[in-house]
Amino acid sequence: MDNQATVFINRGAGHFKSSHRKENHVNNEYMAICPNTGQKIVTLKTYRTNARHYAAVWFGGQINGAHYSCEGTGWAGGYGYCRESAAAASAIQSAHVALDSDIDGRGTECIRGAVLAIAAAFGRQDALFVKANG
Image (cartoon, rainbow, N blue to C red):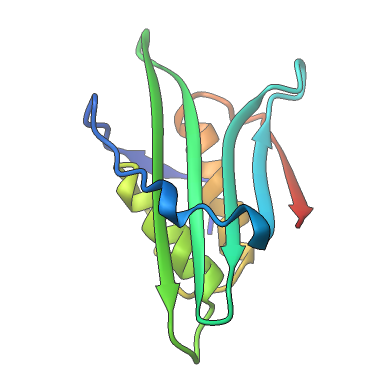
């Protein structure tokens, strides 16, 4: 996936379910970070239980002079595909972001592209990617 995303934002909206955060089951944390300040631009955390993967995403910044702060959560269950990227896709969609390429179930490398694409949509094409394992 190249680093492009179309961002549709509905102010005051976003579907964040705290029940999707499983702090005792953190799997990975994916971040886009400003190279000058170290500030997080995009944070996407994934959590794993035996039956499901969950994801939560937070991001914000300026687009055309307006400030946006967005968040979303999602989950994926079942077998035979990448549940982590499916949960990430669900969280990103619930934050009202439409990506140019589908990442749902397509592997964890797609999460990297999605995180950097969201940062680029907020004008941070220079963002650094960091992945931390839980």
